[in-house]
Image 1: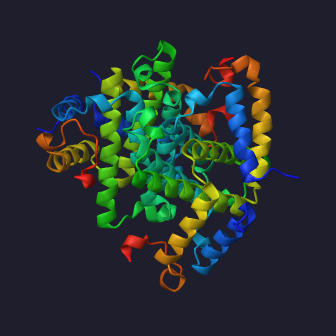
Image 2: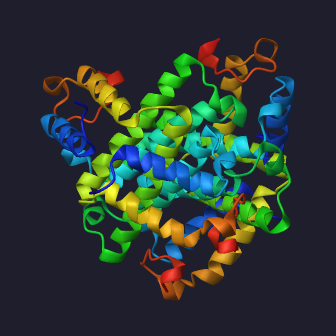
Image 3: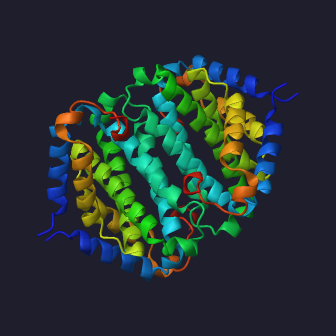
Length: 116
Length: 116
Length: 116
Length: 116
């Protein structure tokens, strides 16, 4: 059976402990490592058109897939360091977004909430 | 019962469809939105010491929690647009990292793999 | 007469000294502040097509202009903290790029050097 | 005599024209390339303490210097594509900051303006 989100958090924590890396994993440093990975992700897309970005060649798609994993790894590590329940946070944010962006009001527009 | 990771993907997809926002959600654009949120996250930590970054005041902690949710939301959306299984990607990346960084070799050092 | 690049470095240094802010301006923190501003810049472009990104409405263009200023301000501050001559660095990098990407070899292609 | 800021803009424009790369250099894409470089910069600092970030070993310092050049190169290119006078933008932003952060009010505090 595949790992759950909670399993992954524990595995990543153990991975850091086994290497004595928790000393480097302050929330500040985690936020840096996370954005560095997000920068590597964006590098794959910066010269592509939007259309091309849907149709990645197999090798590039695999690189992108692993960059996405890196981002989630640091996000899970950060959530562990701060004691944040990530899935609950997403549910709370979706609820907030449903109030901020009622479907009938914003349909087809990318304007930010503040512009309404 | 709380949503699973898969539930969240479907809810976020429906959220975008209901607002006719899928047209804006190309992988290229998702990679931009994701890093913009990662930038908002880092803004919370940039003037803090590493020690302070563990002890966020309640209000700031809540803002950080919701920024983390935003990052995961865009990451899930991107995975949906590219047909990537995020949790599987994390498992695959952990397996790669276990080979790249054997615990006995890297213990207590933050040097990158390439420097070994 | 307008300020030169060197003038700006000295003005920004004095600005920080006057506010006793140099204590926060470690190179590490400067790299974070810089990317946070780059994230605010990207937020202006994330939902635009490439075509639209050339034709910013006046108000948005002014916001983009000031985000660009923020990025340069932190870059100049970082260069000051590290004792780096930024304009010389750009000249050196252009020289490197001219060797890495000979015009006749790369014309019209966005492939990275490593792919050649 | 070294290049001025204006010289660099023209050299970088010619560099792109010679390689038929202007087609890739939309403001949207430039904002992506810029933050990707800012991500490479941050990668050099993410595991260092603030103290260590002042004392980079020679080889790392040279890599950081060239990452800073890359950021400025894309920022200059973006300013060229949008017709923005970068140095003027910095002067205007400094003037705004002087009004927002009066020295006597903010001395020694890193709180953001909005918190005052």
